[in-house]
Each structure stands twice: as C-alpha cells, then as structure tokens.
Image (cartoon, rainbow, N blue to C red):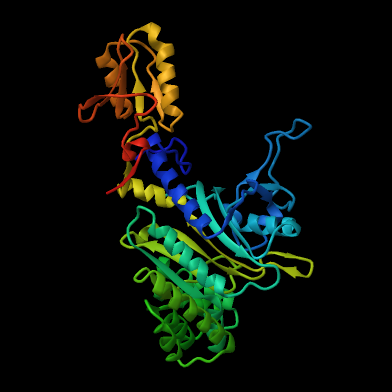
Length: 448
C-alpha cells in the first residue's frame, strides 16, 4: 500500500492501487445501472444553512471561502451565515436539494446513483479520512414512496457488495419506527435522545449507555434495562419479531416498524443468506432517518466500522406542500479500498494499462513503430512506443520495470515478432491481427 500521504486524511493511491479502486467503482457502477439507477453528480459546495439543517455535524463541515475578499481583506468563513459556502459532508443532503430544484424535470420514483468525493473534518485514523469517495444509491418519490423500495435497496446493496473483492459482510438492518414506538411504549418520550444514546452502544458499552439514559433522559432502571434488551436482539431470520413481543411492550408505531422490518429481512435473507441480520441496536446518528436503517460491516473487520449505511427518510426534501420521501444507502469506497489494499484482499496484475511496448531497432524506425502501435490501439490494445533505440535488452528491461507483459520487435525486412517477457515465448505476429490473451488485454484485479 502507498506510503502515508504527506497531508493526513487526504489519501492518494499509487497507480496499481488506483486500478483496484477503479475496479471497485466500475463494479458498483455496473451493478447500479443493471438495476436501473441513473448517474448524477452534484456540486461540491452547498450553503452552510442547507448542510446544517439536519443533524448536529457542525464540527465536521469544512467552510469554503476566498483567502481575501473583494476589498483585499483576509476573508473569514462565517459559521453563523447560512448563505456561506461549505464542502458537502455526504451526498444525501445535496441530493435532496437537487431533487427539489429539478423536480419538474425528473420522472418519479427517481432512481439515482452518485459516486463522488466528500469532505469531513474528522480526526484521521484507519478507515476515516477527511477526503474520501462515496457511492450512493437512492430512490425518491413525489408524495408517497412504496415500502417495497426499502426491501429492494437492501437486495441491490447485497448484490453490489458480493461482487467486490472483500471478505464476508453482514448487512445489519433495523427500523426506527420499531425503536421509537418501543421507547414510547415504555414511557421514554425523548425517542430521538434515546436513539442517540443507543447509537453509542458499540463505542462505550451497555453500562455507560444505561447511565446516559438515566442521567440525561430521566430513564428509570427498568426503562433503561428494557431499552438495552431491545438493542440486544439480533437474528438472521424473522424470529426477532417474537423476541420483541416477548418484551411485553405494545405500541402502534412499534408494530408498524416491526412489520416493515420483517418484510425487509424475509426478502433479504432469501436473496443473500448469511449476509443479512436484523440488529435492533442499529440507530444511525443523523436525525433525518424515519424508518428502515442499514449498516454493514466486514466479518472479522468490525473495528473498521460501517462500510455501507443509510435508511429511509420521509421528510428530508420538500417543496411547498410537496414531499419527496426517499430511501438510500451509501458505500464508503475509500474505506473499503484502503482495507482491500492493506489486507491484500486483491491486487492488480500489473501497474499500467499498457499491454505492449513496441521497440525501436534504430532511431529511424520510430515512425514505423508508431504505425504498429496505431494498428494495435485501433483494436483496443493499449500500446507504448519506446522513446529511444537502446539495446533490446535495455528496452525489455524498461518494459519489465513498467509491468508491460509484451514486447514487439520489427526487423530490417519488416517482419514482426512479439515476446511475452514473463515466459520468454516469442512468436511471429501481424499488427492487424495479433491480440494478447484476454486476461492480458487489460490489468486484472486478482483476489487473494
């Protein structure tokens, strides 16, 4: 893997690492498009007022300002100015704005995928960068979004992740209606506060979460115990329904969430057995989620954190009386790629796209060598021409150092030969017909 970047939190890949990242991006793009999602890209900046209207993420937002204003004075980012600009910290909030502004031109339900850089002012550590790539899919409706999309997105993400060179994963799914109804049923009215506390369960443990519930939200010992009992339920099938009902709490909203979660789990388990779990500890920290919530971890690498998360949001976007409910998931591409590289789950078969180096017999042969290269490129074979007519051994050494598998020779009679420098095999070849084996045409991503 590449040496540490000189600017912490802003990773840069070496060419062979970038090939792995491109493979991940291409795989996700192909899967999303097979399911009918259209690609969009939104601007990198939003207004501070728009970014901060959902969730408490002030410390994570990078403000954007010129070094000097129009009068030549040093400019200061106005944190309290809602019209000040800032870099987006995720792709969901910009997407909500995009939907509202373009509602008259979109066909609903609108299925979109978006792969872009985002920026967060977090403390850099393994799996957390300040600049990173996310890959999102969302379905948004005008008015009412059928619940079936909550199920469909779980299936799409399971398919996309299964196609990547990563270990087994667990798609952990919960429903905030279930959780909020349950808390309401046991007498805890600040359901958002309870969710924020439960969201810290894996970081600080059950004992400290119970203390938070009691000291900050006024929960009794019994209420705290019940909330933690709900969060402890994890099943790889729909048996969680009976486990929840066994806790003896009744609430209409809870029943609605229970029914929705049962549908998602039943379908997802059928499509991706062993990779899906109903996990009633999943809360998601952002306030805009209203129903199904998803988080995904790599088995054996849980300390990396969630590699894919999201959920249902019914009130994130609106325009007058029009509501645009949606459901979406976001894959942390940079986090995934960093782990793929550091653990060598996959690597590129070579570091350059070039398949063939056309050598020079002498300095006057450069023009003819370009003709050979053009004939090869016309058939999709990535080709370079040597820069100098060095000894053939030196030209072959250059190809080997670059990771180019084939070297092309043309003798004084105009006869062509191509050599596989890995095996030493050399054969006669026609620039208009010769093609390398399919696995050598482009760099391959080889799984460990």
